[in-house]
Image (cartoon, rainbow, N blue to C red):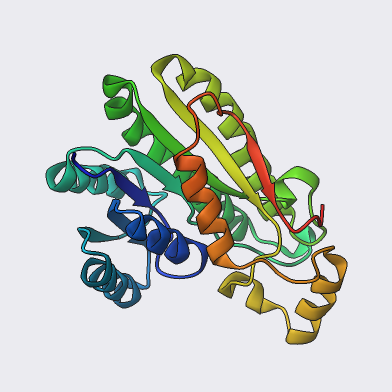
Length: 244
């Protein structure tokens, strides 16, 4: 049987890279994306191909630019035929008072964290509908559930991801396509290294499990969601060590 193909955005490091590694180990063919870390992405593609013996193509570009996304899906179609699984992981944060935030900074957060979902889903859906199957997984955040002080734009974008997930799941359920989101808590990635070691330790003390999550834990959950029964759709699955 032909292996399934997964398209993973924001895959050059952190959660995205861990997801790519997990899906490669599971035998998926991969298309992986990032915007700026081309060398890291290409190195990851080579490493996964050599270690896991799966085809892996790197696609460097802005995932919130519909023109680039269209070209990316054309490349996936030429290489693999279809994308069976779409994982919308690319994201950025902004820490600071809303009153100090510029409109440009606001728009950047919304475009990367939310507009990218529109672009990728729009181009993934037609082939999924034609085949009456497909899986879409959106990487969200607990701040999309409860909000975070000094992270208003990020919280708003992830709240939008959650609502987007629930609405699209209802829209695509008749076509046999599942749409779910993983709302991550504090994960030990580059994004959270804007905080000092002391601040991260204080954060860990607030989490019942007593530590930050590992990207590999998100990756294992993402693979489980991709393999879950079709009847599981429209869910916002929280992974936060009991924090929120």
